[in-house]
Length: 290
Image 1: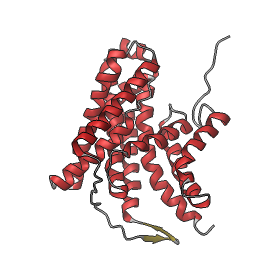
Image 2 (image 1 turned 180 degrees about the vertical axis):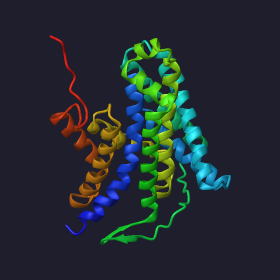
Image 3 (image 1 turned 120 degrees about the vertical axis):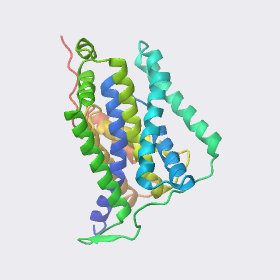
């Protein structure tokens, strides 16, 4: 039990990264009713772009993060143009398979360019732990949590006050009504995919100093996907709560059960949620007119 507060804090740090991936999935799903299975590859792209900017081009960390945002957003727009827009009238399952295929293509292109050699990106914050009330946390992990809080706050302000953010909200509520109001729905789709992918790129940039960089980073899609389902898949606050829950429960399972159990925790959470509350914590069960 002495380990419990420590495990919760470290789990929250991991959960913040899962939440970013989950928010990206939720944004795209709310706008287009499509689950973007290439979202994990945006994490990989962000990590490799960050490595190029910081290590090879010797760019300061913050400007490098801006470039990662832009590059990841462009990848998201590319995926939308290739995997979604030409198939917009196709069944959702067809589009989902297309995003999966694009994700695999991106992974293999990255593997072709960079090979399978793991790479590292230096962190900007110290790895020496700080103690708060008997709980140890490194400035690096604390920086991740603060960065995610800032990103989420900016995202909320963007949707509440900006013209584009309001247009995205209107499109998510009703594409037909948004079109009648003069909103370019295809343009909103493209920008939404760009924003969702940019969030994945930020997650890749943040996670890279902790675990290194390789072509398997896209696997973070799984806990992010589970986090979105736990939250309800249509709720940004739900995605945040789901991400934190998955991060904490993974840590607890990895210590109190076994280290290998940590790898299957996300799947167990997914099955449990689908059995107990399929609509998620913040989702509403679909209503059928009789």
